[in-house]
Image (tube, rainbow, N blue to C red):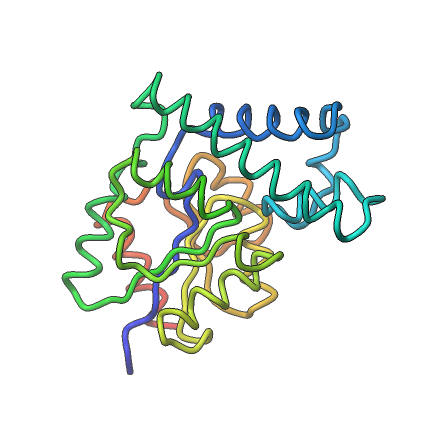
Length: 223
């Protein structure tokens, strides 16, 4: 039986910097739309990818205008991130264990991939700032697909693996929902693991320490 394909989310999973990240996104959105996201907006958004958020927040735009909005907001977001990273190089540090875990998984014959709700232009900057060894890893982003489940499926396809062989690692309830849609295992991580467990995540680790992660992998392989 082949070893599972391990697909990682990025923001909050492989890297930190969420406060800088959301501020840059919010500012880019407001620069285009001239208004902030409504109060409670993110409490009701089921699909948390850059493209899906813009479409949900600007539902009355025609296809041509929403395409322009997505292009303009994603470019503005990437530009703001570049400024932040230049001023604060430590803003997007790798999360504890992330770099070692990718290295150990690769050394032990696992295939790793990345599936993120971010756009490629912005996630590339953050991964580089965090010194995550992502080059050469199959990756899919919201530049490719609208929904997280579609993005995860594309990452598996680019890795040359069927989706039933994948395990997704993420920190958000939207990550868990996507794996439930795809019927694949999920490993929760990060600061919100209690919420993830309450939402139905069976496996969760506080960080990506390789010893903890491989303990969970062993449990999954015994199912």
